Every structure is written in structure tokens, then in C-alpha cells.
Image (tube, rainbow, N blue to C red; front, side, top):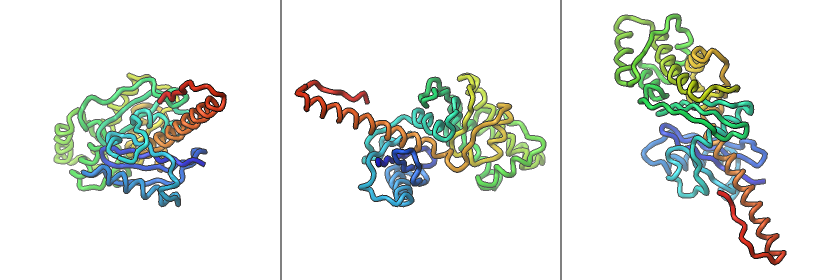
Length: 285
């Protein structure tokens, strides 16, 4: 059995997944992204490893992804987060053909092949008003926790529009709604619909093919999921437990694939030497 680890170093959190060669998740770990990315990666890695009941020597390969993927010195390979999320979304929902990934700082729409390979991508070109950090700022201003706002938002009856693409100006709109006495749940749903509408624009540009899957931490937020489904007028695949681990899962899967290639190359070299052929067999990394 081969064991791989995928570590996704995002702008707000670091996720780690331990995977075996049957693609069974054995353990997962989580840490907040701080000033020391290597330390955060170590924390997430250790949590995942201990949950899996493994020693460091049991790990065959470590793949990193995300914006901080180059900061982990013990990595065996680094993988772009787009590639990793495509594979991770396909793992969570095998029928996935379109992915909307809403992270802390960016929102990305992807169309993927049945293999999980990304064939078309669009990203938000605006500021954090179109991503998860905006909701954190909204929650803070309204003196709520990020865990509370989703359940409150689904109670909205008249969502209040927020049109600004700039997070600072959008917050000014929220202040205006508060001062005019608008219900908190309506303000929250308005904020979520503003993110969802930007995501919808990106999805239209890549062209939606069924099935549509949401990845990223916002999958924990029922208000955000409802806002996306209302904008898209369709059901969206959401794995509330593992959705934010999609990048780490994808990295671990790609690590397994790379190990298979390495094994095939080693076998080819051994066969070549046994037959007396000194030709070089190369791995297409």
C-alpha cells in the first residue's frame, strides 16, 4: 500500500489529507494560515498523520498546492491549485464537469474533463468583495461569527442589494442598510447574493456543464449555498464536510498518480538493463 499526503496552503487556512492507493481518506488536518507557512503546514500535516494512525516513515510522497506550495521543504512535488481542485472536485462528485471554487481571496470557475483535467478557467478580477473574506468582514461589522451568518441569511425575506465591486464601498452599502433599520438576515443574504452574482458571471464565461460542484470553505455556509443556487437556478453539489479539503485531496490523488508513473519508469529501466539495452527511459513529469 502506498500512502500520499496532499497539503493545500491557502490564504486563510491550510488543509492536509492522507490518502491510500485505493483513494481512501485516512486522515485530515487543518490549521489557520499565519505568518509562518511552514509551521502551519506542519501542524495540518501532523493532525492528518496522527488521525490516520501513521508514522512519518509510512508516508511515501508529499504533494503541496495552493499559493504557499513552495514553502514546504519536505514536499516531493508541488502542484498548481487549479489542477488539484479539478481532481478534488471529481473525487467528491465523480459526475462533476464544472467547478466553482470560492476561497478567501478569489473565486474561480472551471470546466473540467471527465479525468479531472481543467480545460477552461475564469477568475474574479475584482477585489475581495467577490470572495470569502468579504463575508468575514461583514460578519465582523455586524458583530456576528462567521458560523452564525449562514443560518441567519437563510431566514431572509427581502435581501438587500449590494452592487459595489469594491469591498470598502460594499461595506458602506451595508452600513447604510443597518442605519435604515433593515433586518440583519436580509443584509447578510444581500452580501451573499453579491458574491453569488459574481460567481455566476464567471460560470457563464466558462459555460456550465453538468454537474456543477462547489469547493472551498463557503460550502459550510447554507446561506451562501442557497444564494448560489438561486442565482444559477439549479442544484449545486456541496460536500459540507470535505469541500474545503478539495485541493488537498486533489494533490494527494495526483501524488498517487505520479508514484504509479515513477514505478512504471523504474520497471522499464530494470527491464531495459536486464535485456542489455542501455537506452534511457524518461518520465514525463
